[in-house]
Length: 341
Image 1 (spheres, rainbow, N blue to C red):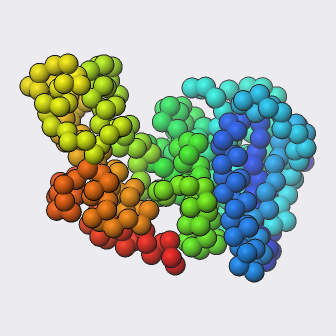
Image 2: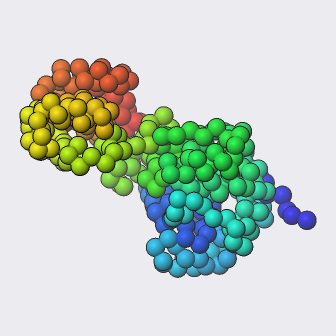
Image 3: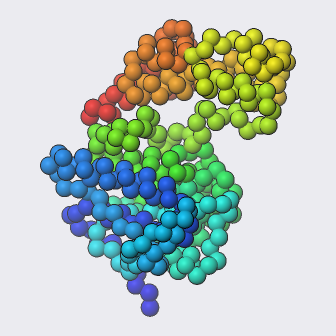
């Protein structure tokens, strides 16, 4: 008879179990693991115990990663938990997750017996790991996200799961799901902040050279990737040029020169293929640069200059036009408080 997988509260650190299967995406676990390592070091430097104990578990003692490197010395799947634990389920390459092999089936059988509970046994999925969790029945009735290429697969696998698209990560009680490789780091930073406080999370982000931390309400896709779901080469050339040099003195004539077309025709091409006007696209890209600068502690004036806005007023006007929350000054103050608290 199977041992029920539950956890027993203890006044100790979190056990963080990375479930490694054949072809697990190496960045799905290596990035979050490094963030946890840095958080442990930061806590120890402050005279406090390391809060995370990383464990790497698998149905087999070794496996091959997505890039071909063999990962050995893996722990067997535990039958019980003696400390509060996170179980982290990872993605795999490809547009469809295969679970019909014996190792995946063994992992699914183990996952299916988990009983996620806040502050006891929590489930974190990264990228297509949400689909694996869905196959194990762990997402029924919950809100969750996954990589945008797997959203339909997730919905098919768990029809009563509320699948949320275009989100960095989604939190539903003891279940956390993230959209992809880099968003897994965003999720871990969020959890580090909850356990260690925002100052430690900010220190980890700075060590990892992450200029902008994203939260559960932020979109998965960067503004630099928005309006790019088309195949028109002239429009792509203009978008590439704007993204590479947003501070250039762009106007419709300059954009048309890059596209090798007339300004009027370029406006029609943008409307048809990118669903946005060329100058509005430019302002959106400049806003993304300004937001990143503000999040890194730059003043409103510095952010406006770095993004190519002619003045603070132009930045504030664009901020309001695109209905971003608050104001540039409020955005700066919020991220400054997070970094110094």
